[in-house]
Image (cartoon, rainbow, N blue to C red; front, side):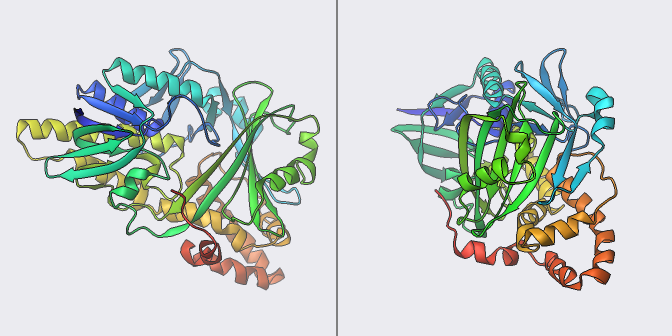
Length: 447
């Protein structure tokens, strides 16, 4: 039997849940399809931070309303319940392999400001999923877990989706099934995208870690004979626990070995003397060029589906909400027989806030840094020249621009001391696809 709806949303992650919530609240008949049998279960490595709470991110200011236990996106005027534990994070500290620290904001000063000094919050993603799922169901959305999509068939007036022995039809489909999107593949969105590489991550929940600052995000790079990697140490919302995430784009790197390096050899090793591993996660994500036009043939792309690797959780939530509102508008316009403009509201936002500012290239260029400064000694020298304070943030785009500005003074010094380093830094002007050519050759997309 074929089930019929106004809109089908594929993927019950942050983006899909917000898309379904928006459409459901607007009165649409919504089917939310998810391949996991338990949509609330966290199954892959994730930083679990809601970033950029001290600046605009994709056009929104984000705030956690602790009184009413709601995450609020103020300019767009939407919010949702989150009643789990959370922890304010006050800055980002980026270390060189030899221990020089670059702080994005003064930790002590940011913490002195209290709630207004935070750059992000750490939260429990499984509780967030449960809160969102409860809200989605309360606005009439029909949730179908355990559905793996095999086929999407487009027509002039709708879309049919087939998977796990079930068939669904709707006027529109919102693809929110993540960075390794099945929908993007079967509907042809990936056809013209450039494949860079894969993004590999291994994560451990740890107890007993003793970093210098308890409410700070830490980034440390590492090098081995196999290739480059880096680690993020993020405080969890449960006091006494941290999330150690080690990542690379090089398939030759053994991430277990990289974890051992950070915990036993790197400059941060003393922090882990009392550490105990509690839980492990991993993930492999495709890195494609971004989807420029996120709509065709009644399918709208939302969240990480159309990005280079991810939009961060904040961006995925915003994207999902806007996709749900856009499709709600389009459905109503069709019912009224008026010119359909709803979809363009989303595509214009996508291009204006993500594509046109060059966010995809900024993100991928950051992954290229170890292939420009390709030894620990090079990285120690260049970043060791950065002495001036950098504005507080936890945002890949803001951080990249801030580092670029701070690097200007460093390059002036390096021109006198290390012209060989300056020659390497000139390669930063190359597009990411050229910088990652070697990695692309030895990588292949995951399905």
